[in-house]
Length: 484
Image (cartoon, rainbow, N blue to C red; front, side, top):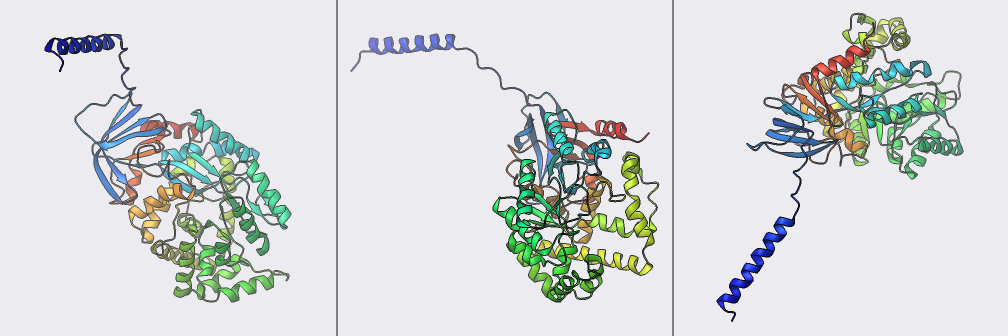
């Protein structure tokens, strides 16, 4: 056993050593302050549709660093926002927009970017156009912080058949042409493939899906009426844009109608979508609808209803848009593209106009059935040049309100414009919810959107890539692009 003297010596030596080590250590630097702290805020959990009250959310750079129950301890921050009485949710996603119109409209399209942020939209999915180099340039600038705008996912040019309707489309007919088109899209580093239906054949449409599937590329699009939606779903179609194609699959006579379209293609009067819609509407079958919805859900094929633009276009003959407040932020060159649809709408018969309104009611009724069947619903506006009076930003808010009017809960509509978009684009690990490690793309509202979806309009602050924009800052951004 050691003597007490030895024990004292050792403990004294240990104490001396510890003191020397302590004296020689450099003081640890204090943790860097957060870039932004939002205190005592109500966080909306879009997964559960519930509110987590009195939270502290801290951002560092372009990421959420902390989400926890607010306490008495202070948080070092370069900037703070008092969240008392306010509601925080992920920034909104618009899953169907267009940047297009050719080189002469590049600047006019760029000036639309602030409109998205001003309405709480921090991410958009460009669904095909003819200015891909410009879109890619904006995306780099937005990422670098030199241009204010939403994150952009893009399909680049559309794929279509020979003599395509939209300029810049990649025209395909053979497998070789399809693979060449997909090669070019991959070289552009697009995020998915958009297929259009103006002149593409049934075989080419289905083969685009199959060849894209082999490459691991997502496919979405319109669909020629010579194809059945179930065929496309089986090939791997990831999403159907709009409801025209889902609606055809809800016909109890889908096989007969599809064959009729195919037979007409070799005649002088081929039948297209709008010629067939009355027959589709007249043969709607709840049993057929249930079958296709179940098939879509099983194959994870999403749908983008775009109800708002449907109503806007159906109302064109009777609505005066000349006093729209949003028109002031739309370049005259883009306004000029509105005349094509406007002239067509005003020239249609009273019977055709009435059927269009009837169709929109039918489409609205499909939405809650799709949701109940487990089909992923994505919120998209279809805003952009040529789509008359469907204004970027504002039209997505209108879409959310119409989804709720159709029968979705406010929570389901919010998921359609947040988490569902992130999941569809494969980035749910970094986006779509308010959680640690997620992108700092957030929307701070004065009122709870779960109790009334219209409260998405009560914007206090928009945070994009970690940068907060107050109502005043958003107003200044809009003023900068307002037409003089």
